[in-house]
Length: 205
Ligand SMILES: [Fe+2]
Image (tube, rainbow, N blue to C red; front, side, top):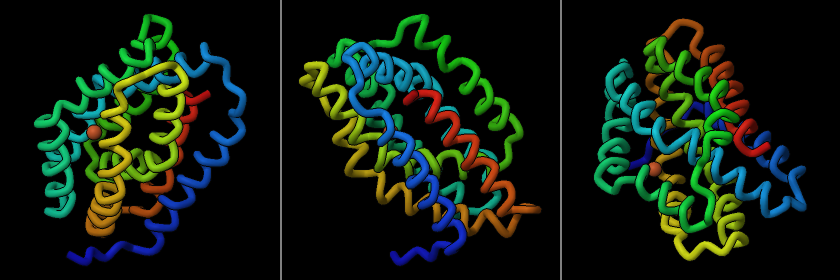
């Protein structure tokens, strides 16, 4: 199916990818300890939260396209146990999250939770769309770090590397439909993308 995407939304999401890509490229020559710390923080921030954030979209999106995108993705997340897959990815890289990792992401996770608590379909859809779009940048990086740490289980990054282009487009399409149902839609999308980028930078710092 050819899904139309608002060009402004496409441009905003693309610039989020450029932003995170430029940010990550400054992080060269990471020590093994630093790589491990990033995988720990990523797992601490995503493992227990992603499904509930996707669930929020499925109950608060006003557009049928938003509900459809969220429900379909939520189904796959749970059926294939992506949270468990992420934990296995971290374990194989000898980088399961510790208390320090949870503490390091506590504030940025709390910020996203407070935003999700508005139960705005547009904000929640934009959060997921930004994570799915920028994953094309950070998933390969996570995979490389895990390999460098001696991992032999890259199922999480392989699956997310392949699937997320379709998911990313699906969520950009859903935002396109949700946009017209919210006041100051573009402003909301811009602000939410900025917040999500901050959340990611805090993980990869
Ligand atoms: Fe997933």
